[in-house]
Length: 314
Image: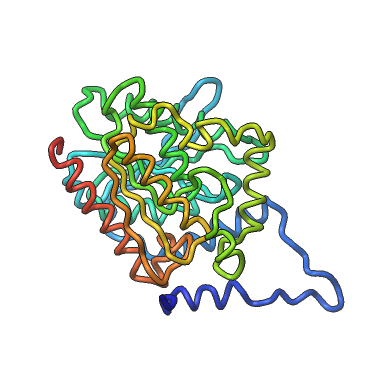
């Protein structure tokens, strides 16, 4: 499938060779500098944020620490449900700033209040810090928003955030069956294994094989962590408590081959799964609404899924 014209333009800009300063070597940004750049560029690439009634930053108290959660309320907040969103960024970058537009657009598309979680990043805070933050933050948000326990809750996440959604939904549903009513996984990291799609799209498609190696080393400095079910969810003995799941894939993505393994594993334990493949797009396309209409289409697909799986509770 030929790449979407907007995605072609994005890649033409990303893949331009870097010109070194007069006679010197190319100066690479530090991780802190890259994080700032990623926040700014991603927020611009996601496009305009419209039809939002309010946006509020909340400080959520966890065990021995606190973190910021950004709450988005759309003008049409007619769904009797709310969502918690975990951003992507390879566990090393990304934030509520980089994914501000996506979280807002998800709120509008799903007609739901969305909480976006600013969890700790590696390498300063490697695994299991992000998992602990997401599980504890979800519990805190439930206490804050759902004291009567009557409102359905769904989780959502892209890339690294998809992995954190999987792990969090299992952790909460294991102790409180059905607490998480559905999850929306956008090109999720599932096992951290190098599958054939990593080789097919190793370079030139935004997310590279080298990126994946770097992220894994930062997030998982102990290789033994690859056998932890909070990393490779397919190893979880509690996979069957996962909620109905939508997986969104991009057909030109190194992580493309992760989705079929997840779908098969979930269906094998009786979990309802839908897998939507978007053609002509790359990893991160849902964050590129300023360049491709397929970003909006993917978020609308999320809303359709919630219509089916939360309708009985909404």
